[in-house]
Length: 409
Image: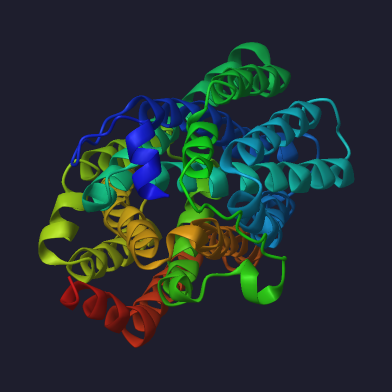
C-alpha cells in the first residue's frame, strides 16, 4: 500500500514535501488553532459563569477522556473505512460542538458539549496522523512527523493569544464563533483529499487482487500491541503538559504575573525550533538518546514553575518544558509508526493518542483538584514526581523495544 500511495503522489524516493503532506499540515493548523483558543478561553469562561478551578479542570478533562474512550473506534474506522471520511466526521463534530459551547451557561451542558467535542478531536487526530504516515517516505518518517508538528506548535503560540485578545475586545462568544469558522476552512480543505481513492483503484487494477476482509472491532483489534510500551510512558509524561496548558492563565493570576500568555508563545516557539533538528538527531543517534534528555527537561521545567513568581522565570520554564516535549512527543509518535504494521497504523495511532489524551485529561482533572487543595507550587512538585515516574516506565518497558528496533536496521 505504501508503494501504491507513493506512486500515486509521484514521490521521489526521499521526497519529503508533497501536496498531500502540505495540505494535511494546513488542516492540522486550522483545527489546532481552534483547539488552543478553546483550551485557553474555557477555564476563564467557567470561572466567569460561577465555576471554580476544579470545575474548570473537570470541563477540560472530560474532553480528553472522551477522546481517549473513542480512540479504539476511530482507529478501527481509519483502517477499515478510510482516512478522509474519519477526518470529515471528526472535524465536523469538533466544530459544531465548539460553537454550541458559546451558547450555553449551564455547567452540565458545557460538560456534555465538551465531551462531544473530545469525540470529534479523537477522530481528527487519529486519522490525521495516519494520513501523514501514509504520504511520507519511510526513511524520513521521523523527520516528517516532527515537521508536521510545526502546525501544532504555531497554533499553540497564536491560539491562546487570539482567544485572550478576542475575550478582552469582544467577549467570550467571539472566541467560539471564530473557532467554528476557522475549523470550516480546514474541513473544506479535507474535501480535496483524493490519494486514498486513487491508491485503491490502482491496487484493485493489479492482477490477482483480492479485497481484504474487514477487521471487526474488538479489544484485541482496537489497540496495536507494538505501540503499548512507548504509549505507557507517554501517558505519564503527558500529565504535566495537560495541567500546564489548562491552568497557566489561572496560575498567572494567582502568582500576580502579567502577560502570562507569553508562556504559550515561548513554549510553542521552543517546540517549533526543535522540529527542525530533533527528527534528524533521532534518526542518526537513536530515539532513546533524544527522549531521555527530553524527560529530564520537562521535570526541570516543572521544578522551576514551583517557585516561579516573575514573568522571566515563567518564560525560562516555558522554554525548558517546550524543549523537553519537543524531544519527547514527535520521537515517540514516529517510533510507534515505524514499528507498527502498515495495515495497523490507525490502531497504532489510536493507541498512542489514547495514552496522550488520558495523560492530558488526568493531568487537567487531578491537577485542578490538587490546586484547590494544596496550591500551585505543591502541584508542580507533584508533577515533577509524575515525570520521574514516566522515565521509570520508559526504561522498564519502552527503551528495550527502541534499542532492539534500531539494532535491526
